[in-house]
Amino acid sequence: MLSNSCRYGIRAVIYLASQSLPREKIGIKKISNDLNLPTPFLAKILQQLVKKKILSSTKGPHGGFSMLKDTRKITLLDIVNTIDGKEIFTNCLMHNGPCKCVDQNKKPCPIHKDYEEIRANLIELFSNKTIYELEIKANKEDNISI
Image 1 (cartoon, rainbow, N blue to C red):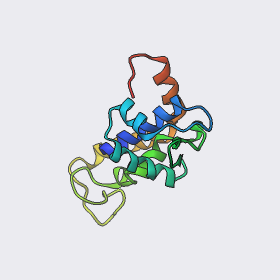
Image 2 (cartoon, rainbow, N blue to C red):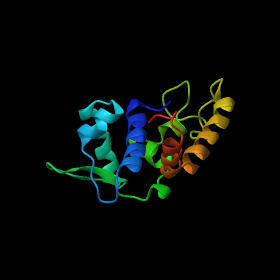
Image 3 (cartoon, rainbow, N blue to C red):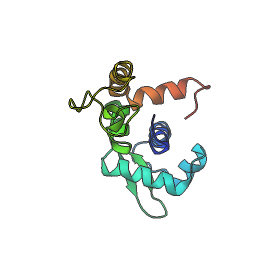
Image 4 (cartoon, one colour):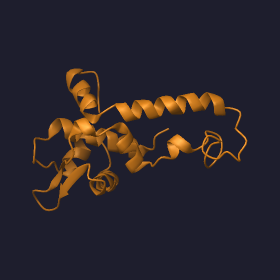
């Protein structure tokens, strides 16, 4: 459901939240190496998060990325909306474009009612799950990888 960009962004934000100290920058090469993600692709994703003031970045030999916002105030929904947009919550599962719940002139698809409940659950989950909670869980449980 989520794009690779979005999944990589979520992983990188959790990583930065758990690894960086206040005002400490972590370089893109270290982030991409530690998460085993392609550096140029990850850099573009992180710049989107910088533009939305979730992360901060500094260029140069001692530059890198760090958290700008308090991780208790960043939700999964913030990351998803920044990288993938709101389409996951509005588009029909079977057709391109908005679902009947968004466009009342369209007939519902055969899976509309089933997906409507899942969509509501996703919005609730993503709205209520903070990066701080995910960071704590990832740090506590050795079997969770980011």
